[in-house]
Image 1: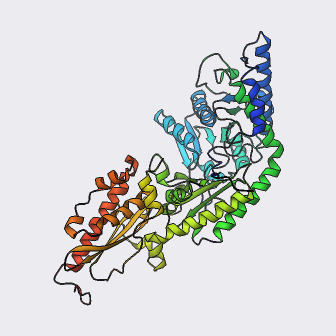
Image 2: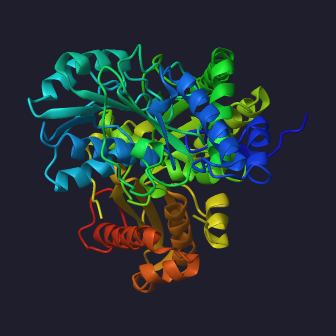
Length: 408
Length: 138
């Protein structure tokens, strides 16, 4: 079999739609085009039934007791906005303090920054070298004014899986709400809002082989009954929490994607973890001073993040980008010109944050692709080290940290 | 971000990668940038001390593709110039030649800094009458 280039290995950014998902969606663009809130004719009934089924499929994936607890949104970013802003507004009289982590994703960070400007206090709990947040640190950060803990389930860069069930337990003990951003985790690893004490959960379809443009916010209805203020007012759809016509084809696709993920999760997780380990071994056995970022075991099966000392991440991507799609924590690949705050938060040298490369495997990744990507990555890193002054100095025995660098 | 053809060319076929021994007569070395900023350039010139003409230039760069391209281009431009002429290379010349987008202008600034640092080092080491013992400028 010939290898088809370029190879997509950036599955923490998005995933391709599974053909089975697309097939389920198609009729809802054409003959089944009704509005799910049209209560008085068969077109509406048909659309409503389809959305209900999708709601059920998503609910089942995350262990929700009642499908009504699933609120469809436009995606993960909106879900996070709705959870944090909606809870902050609803529970303002109870308190004005939220605890999150230093490595939660950009959407959470940006919402928190805005909430801070509005008088909400936020604690960004640091993480350890392995990317894990400590439950004790979260407990310590809490105040009598804390209304919400928001911790991502699994990190989008390093794949580290947080102790979600323990955090849920802590939240219950303290009587505060617990939101988790499960955008990377849902559909990939077991997520159970009941067993893990989750009150609010954000998910998105396009990271689980569903379409872009649809996500969900799980909002617990019992023990406790969680209420959030809506961000979008209108027709009172989605139990008043998110007005706007539910995009039926997208919701149907999300539901189907969730069902496929749930049914194949154990097997797919095992297969991808084996491929991921193969890639990791291929690279680490051939490149010295290459470091795994994140927790070596508690991590997503399809994620691999490695920092290559002495070479800059964007230059690695540039050497590969005709053949392989990857992502880097390098400043040069971000709009802000700052290196990855996630890698930096691990306490590694900031030089290594510039050097991190993320490999994201997915349902359609093959062993052949893995071997190709591993081989090419090693070649490119070696080539760049040959032209790296830092590598040369390190090999000469110069202690790079002892030098006084003339920064711009 | 799409790269210009010239950036891709310099990245894929960098000119003059390598190092001179710092003690070689006529060699000036510039080392600029910082690892934590994600860019370090080492640029070296080898000057004919009689004529003041840069006979050879080499670089090594830790940085993005545009940083590599900027320093590669700089070595190309330096060769054959006199020391005085070399000082006239401006970062904007590099920006124009490589069609660098605004976010990559700092790469060209760093390359200009590297050129200046190398020229200074050369002058410091090889054009002063009290050259360090054992490092004859002849």
